[in-house]
Length: 79
Image 1 (cartoon, rainbow, N blue to C red):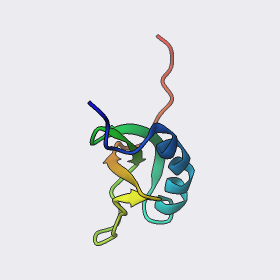
Image 2 (image 1 turned 90 degrees about the vertical axis):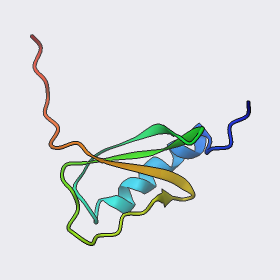
Image 3 (image 1 turned 180 degrees about the vertical axis):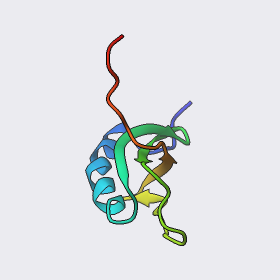
């Protein structure tokens, strides 16, 4: 079965652009690649939700975007 989604290469290429697009809109703590609709997309992790009414793009450079509020990231100390 062939994939109809975005290629891994396109998703990787869109990561830096996604950071540029989302950083002015919300507190970004990470950007990565994730599986989306049989292909790949960009995942943008936010520290907190953007201000009410802030429109967040559903795609960057034609690559789908998933947004998740994950909170503040903290370094874990070894046990």
